[in-house]
Length: 135
Image (cartoon, rainbow, N blue to C red; front, top):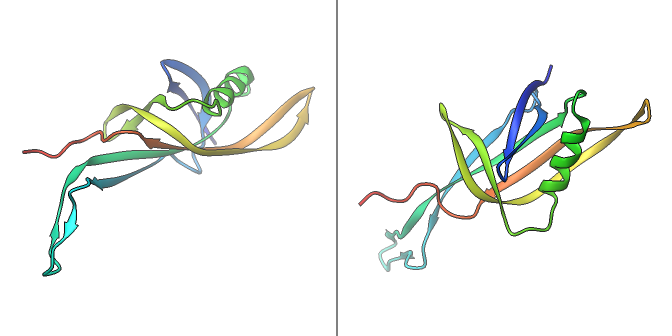
């Protein structure tokens, strides 16, 4: 059974359901800068820029708020440089600028004159590190 969650995108809360069977995924990568190199002896000389956290979100419409799902789909598929997204992170949340790498959903059918979509998957990628190296 999906659980209700408001997704906050660009400061607006969309009432959609996050799928319980495909939970939110958080991944990270540590990016190296232009001064990163491998020395002649094979040892790495790092130039850590920071840690980037990325998210994959799986949502479905809440039957009480079909218009929120449609509005969320329009917002995430808009041809913009980035969005500001708020996602769970540890026991708190993380708000960051992200580009939408990809997204897709499926049309289940038409019920009572309303198109029913499911399986929306959205991949968000941070545009800047959320954690920088400590000195």
